[in-house]
Amino acid sequence: MGNSINFKIHHVGIAVKDMGKAKETYKSLGAEVVNEVRDEKRKVHLCFMKMNNGYVELVAPLSDYSPVSGFLLRNGSGTYHICYEVDDIDRTIDYLKSKGFILVERPSEAVLFDGKMVTFLYSKDVGLIELIQK
Image (tube, rainbow, N blue to C red; front, side, top):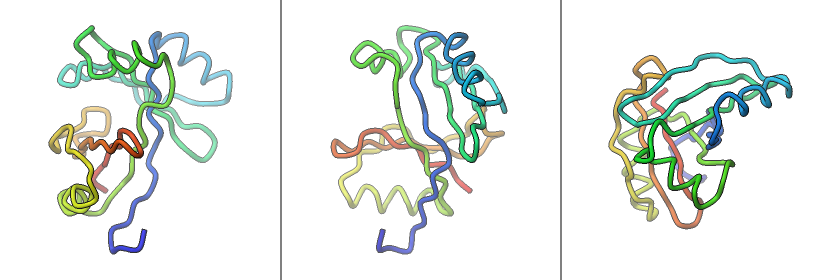
């Protein structure tokens, strides 16, 4: 990207209406469940799956007030975000904000990733992205 910040793709987040059906579909494509949790803070049911040489995260709402609920109403199931692993989450946030990204959620611990810090930002040009602290 022409800067000293490294963005390594960590996973693709997929918004799903029915976690059970989506999980079975991905299993039929060769994916294996790595971790599955209910993130009450973010109001989502998450299933992290390894698929060949990459990862997908299935994201289903726990309530109508879940951030993913609106996405599903507008778009149906589909790609929700791309997550990038970064060395310095705060420096990366500052960099992305300087490029016009809007901070959607301040960095906080992610139950799915054993307490690693994550944050979400949005750009009208690329949509929602997640950052995870290396």
